[in-house]
Length: 566
Image 1 (cartoon, one colour):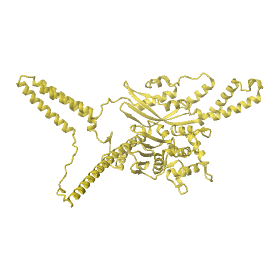
Image 2 (cartoon, one colour):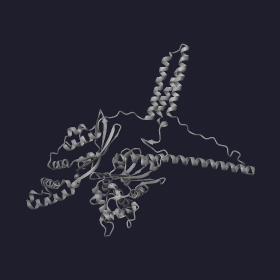
Image 3 (cartoon, rainbow, N blue to C red):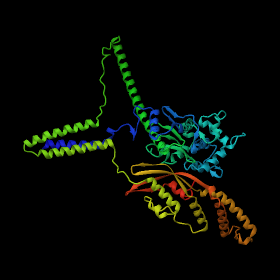
Image 4 (tube, rainbow, N blue to C red):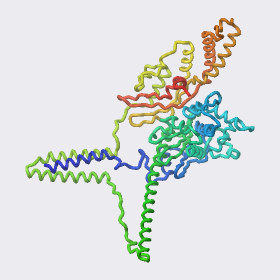
């Protein structure tokens, strides 16, 4: 009886051991991507095959900042870079900050540079970027356009000779993969030269583009997004702080499932780097050990030679030295061991039966159940976590939510939110000015689903392109019109009906002028529309998909007025 108890205890301990040590059975993979024995070109080819990518429509670059390993696809092909240009653009200004020639609080185009840096990198504000390149374009004194002069200034960051550059470099917002890698290398290897820029890139879109799936490592990135007709141009460039830091870039031109291709590329680059870093470190340690062993052997041989006065003959030169090697323990081997243990238990049970112990049937059943538990543990380790498959279409939920927001059906919109009762949209302002802004903002809303909905177990992500009225961009024009209207009021009315005893405008007069100016500006509200890529996150709960509103969506729904600040 005691023997059987001991055997069953051992089996149960093995079950616990297997559950607590899944790494012993893990392969060198990131999900479906394996790196063992594969080159960079091979894993990229697997990515292209997985998503049926036409190589002509994509540009890639990779550089390991430690080893110098470098790879490209269409290295010198000029492609639309979208907002990635904001990296070298801000390198111009942050370098001046590093040299003490510019302060973060200095005004450029009426804004502190710190605001322009944050707005152009973290929030990808195109108006702020235009202020910067317009300012930079004034620094060179030649007959070229402001835009051409700005591109001349950033050329050294891109590894381009401004005087002998390909005409396409100046034609539009084009870069090549090799140029972007050159730019990122310079930034990553000299962060003190461009103070604050990498930190802003680390804050940009923390759950999208290259960061859509890859959350294991700190990544500083700047993405680009542009649609022309039905063609999507999606790109991203990044510094990833893996054990060996890397820089990598992707340009796409009408690639199907571009978001998923981009996300998987980031995961593959980080996984490929980590795998090869481990191999490199292991090889370096082995070489170091061999060198130390050789040094010891040479020292010993030298000492023996000195003691004997002559070189000793190594009679064991051809003798093989014993070496240690790891032994794998596969799933089949484990199962075989379990079956042998079960047979042993059966024999022990029969032996105990003869001595008047427990019944063999119950002993064998106990062994079977223990073996099944052990096998299930092994399968769990090798197959991964079992997750209930959600039902329903998260993309449809995202579309229903946005349709409800735009149509003003807030009851339905809020019923699709997870742990969020209100976005404040149903609270229409009562004052005249607030109502003008509210109505114009509501009128501006439109959206488009872009890319596929990425589903990961009980979570999903859907990218949308959201158009809205950027209220802060109206401020300068409203202010100018207000001053003009106030001037007309002063000229047409008695002084006492305009000013108080301290020569300040009466509150009702200032309010009247501002409301009229705002109304006139908003007659052409479409001039102040902006379009922004926003990621909707969804979660599966209680049999349905629900939207988790991101801060970027809340800010857009407020017309870019929520959470504003320096």
